[in-house]
Length: 199
Image 1 (cartoon, one colour):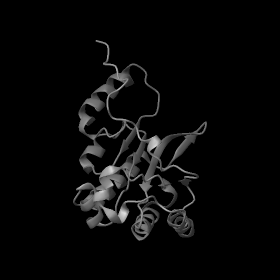
Image 2 (cartoon, one colour):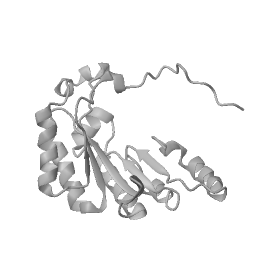
Image 3 (tube, rainbow, N blue to C red):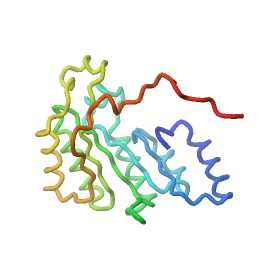
Image 4 (cartoon, rainbow, N blue to C red):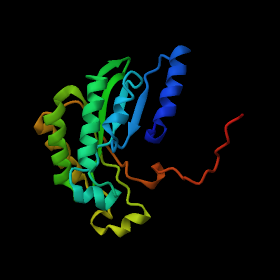
C-alpha cells in the first residue's frame, strides 16, 4: 500500500475480510512517515512490513521543501512504533516477511543532514531495521524555486553518505548503483491508460 494513510480505516476493514478469506501474503505499508502514532498503532496485527521514508532531520528543510512542520519529531515517533509492531527483519525466499525498511533520499548539498539521519537510525535501532540510501533525486520543474537543490546529486555526495553509514556500523542497507535519477522513472500522472474498475 503506497501513501495509504488517509484510507487506513478502510484498509483495516478490508484486511479483516481478506484475513477471514485466507490472505497469507505479507502486508506492506509504504508511507512518508509523517503520521500519528495512533494511526500506526491501529495497524498492529494487520501490517507485516513497514517502508517509511525518513526525509529530513532539520525543521527548516521539512518546512521549506514539504510544508511539513514538526516532520522529524512526528516521523521518528511513527517509525519507532513501526519497529515496535513489526519487530526485527524476517526474510524467507529472498523476501522480507516482517520488519522495517527505512528509506532516505539524499538531497543535493544536504550531506550533513543525511548524516544526522544516519546517526539517528543507528543510535535508535542498530541492526533491528534495514536502510535504503537513495541517490535518485530528480529535479523536476518546480525545483527551480529552490536553487540550492536544483541539480542532481553528485557521486561524491552519495558515496560520502554511504561511507559514513558504513563507518557508523550500518550493514543492513540497500545502496543504489548507476544512473537512477532520470525523468524516465517518473510516471506520467495524466490518467492515460487507466481504466475504471469494473462494477
